[in-house]
Length: 154
Image 1 (cartoon, rainbow, N blue to C red):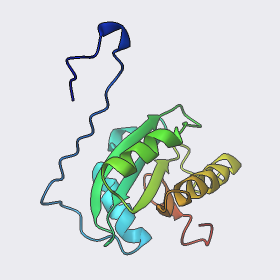
Image 2: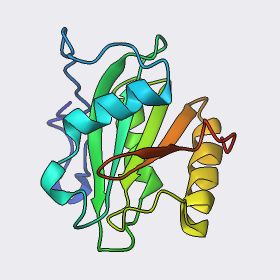
Image 3: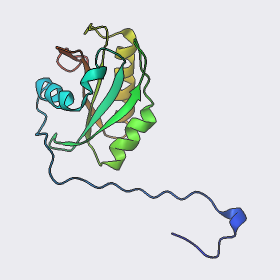
Image 4: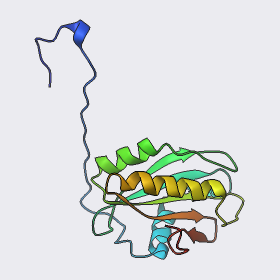
């Protein structure tokens, strides 16, 4: 909102938040890691799966329907970074209640690294402070996936 009485030397940044929800989504309700993997494979750039690590998130509503997805980072051959503030911004913007994190391992190995495990714990803990839930974190390769939730790690 513009206030014509504010002098230029006192002007500050103004935040305006906007999100337009699509009425139809090609993705149905996510009820399992298999559903999440199927959805992810529609999003993930196939030509990049064996090349560089990419970190994405699926934002979900209360019925576990996909509201949106977001590319969070593109890294190198063996790692990518995540700024949790960007993840949370997207969750708040879309009015999400749950999230599914996913990234690829170009090496083709499904075993999570110590960094993957620590990141998952940190994300889950951070989201919990805002009553948001991390439902799963999937590591994907060209032919398969690893689910933290299926392994009891979330």
